Image (cartoon, rainbow, N blue to C red):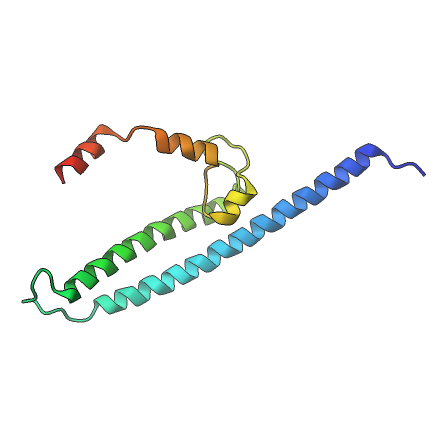
Length: 143
């Protein structure tokens, strides 16, 4: 009995595509879990901010410094949450794992490391190397 080389190739491709689909599914599940974790953590941090602060506290007061750190941490978490929600919307639309700039598949290793990625490494690198708008750079200088 002879095996058709084309059918063996198709079977191999089918297995590869199945593995990619399984990894995508696992990454989407990871995104959903990370979203739940972030929401709980943001809620916990916001609850700590509800405590009263002495209005006469000095600028260097450790309680004020700690509150500022918590506010910055919440802001960082909210930005990550936005990125996760955006990636989950891509998944619902069937576009998860596809670069939104060039339309090519995103490397599975990149998605494993950063499940909320919506750009391939090449496109992300290009965007990061583009000069920032002059108004933003000017605002940074003024601050």
